Length: 203
Image (cartoon, rainbow, N blue to C red):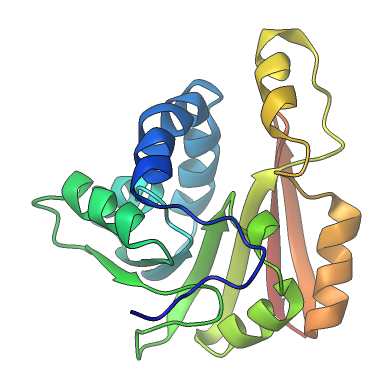
């Protein structure tokens, strides 16, 4: 089987995938991260979406349940995909496949490509964005969702965020630097509750 990870990228096997699905997903719900992402996407007019580094598939599944989007999703971990497919039993508008930010198995164009809490793991961020941009439809965009490194970490929720932010986050400066290196432009930025969404588009 092909290895979709680059050397140095965090890998998720059967055990770590199960732990992430059971605990990290619940934490993201408590922090309202999924709510932040799904609400942001649901206000768009996009129809065909691609999710990169989908993990247990929480966001594609929530979007597919709206019956407004056709959602495709990839992850480099077979164990994660097994969990995602199990979580999506009965849903017809979500499609999972092995892949990564450098390997997309679908032969269609997307109105929007999204990635949540995944880009900080990528070793070749600029190259990945250039590659992904080839799968965008006309006027399509790439939305990246992460914890914001500079966000305040006060209060009980802030304390939880403080334990996961560290290297699991990106700053706006880093997002802009990645745009410059990829040949794309930053179309818009949205911040809320310690989260950040940066939208990339063709220059």
